[in-house]
Image (cartoon, rainbow, N blue to C red; front, side, top):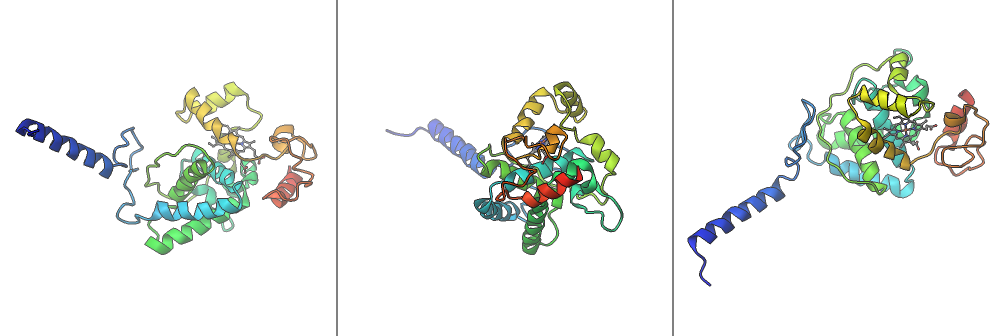
Length: 252
Ligand code: HEM
């Protein structure tokens, strides 16, 4: 069957369209993003950043999938206090109490900080110090969701690292406590421009991970815990961060 000039033109245009679809996977994401962020931020300066992080996290999670929860929560605690600026990573050893010392952050996993530090070293070894720690935390959180069975999503990049951490008061004011009821949580998240649908989606973060019993009972010696374990008594010696639990529980 002869191909007419008209149908040839149609085929050419369709294939060009298809090719452009495959070549611009990232730029296709059209929902609005914050000023300064981009889908292609490190495409020239560090094109392997995301693959280095994904590859290393696959290894980490093969050994202990529990670390995915620690990394996801770290991103949440970073972003809710003065934005996603990596300030939760600043330990305050030189300048006094930091965000890390505020009560909600005492239960962040120590291992999560180590994993981020290791990822930072790997990425910076490849590209120099062009990739921000805040972006590394955001990518690690996304990979944690995906590699633990959740959805895959693109992360716009270009976050700048903060030079200062928030005060303990600001940290407490921005991270809702576990005693908050639904209305209080809706109000707290509305202040961050997040609606009820966002609250439901974000609450899905709690489908992975564990909690100190003290976070929900107010008593470090209670045997109840979020996931039904016996965390504060340390009877589950194989828990990935048992020592942290015991240490932190003792401080509640
Ligand atoms: C909005 C209000 C929120 C409250 C009141 C809240 C509260 C808590 C509490 C009390 C714990 C247990 C901490 C412990 O004792 O170790 C926890 C754990 C956790 N939260 Fe949230 N959370 C909130 C939002 C979020 C969001 C938005 C995410 C992520 C999308 C998230 C992800 C996690 C994860 C993954 C854990 C388990 C951490 C681990 O296993 O180390 N949370 N949360």
